[in-house]
Amino acid sequence: MDTHQLKRKINDCIVKTMISGLPHLTSTYRSCQPESYAGDMCFELLGFDVLLNDQAEPVVLEINHTPSFTTDTPLDHHIKYNYIRDALTLLNVNEKTKHEIIRMRREACQQRVVTGKKVKMTQQDRDAARKQAVDRKLLFEQNNRGGFQRIYPTEQETDPYKKFIDYAE
Image 1 (cartoon, one colour):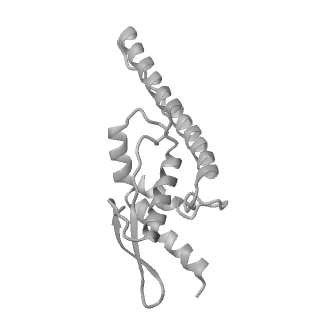
Image 2: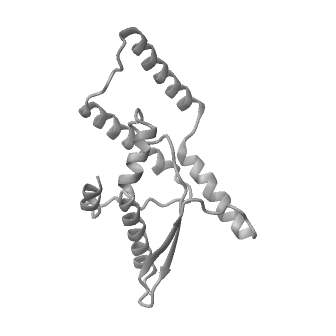
Image 3: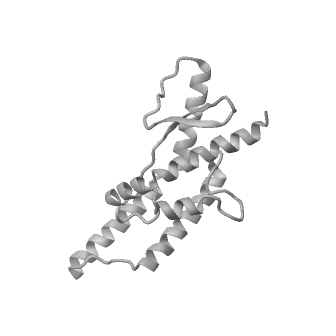
């Protein structure tokens, strides 16, 4: 069996499953974080259970939104410890970021007090801010992913998932 091909198929199942939940995730996130154009104010660790059928085709059995982090064996401990460590590294939580968010919120609040209005960005400005934040985040992730492997977005010229994402949005 070609294990690289099997891994590509499993990754494909995971990406398509995530895309199917994209409208709900996006709506929930934006209702909780309307001012976050970067999309990096929260995260979730998911556990995908994938089975292989009799033709060695992957099938998603379930997605655990609260995977267990108990460790019963040294192997369990090694895998889960590294998983959590790498996830926290990718979050890039630090004092500088915290203070920057607090400063920006204070400035927005102060501006509302002075002008009596909430300053709104145009859709074009929001899109530009979002793109800049995503590009910055991708670069950081590329250099700090630890044991994680990026499965989306791919580094291919054409995006095989674009039609699914366009439909989901």
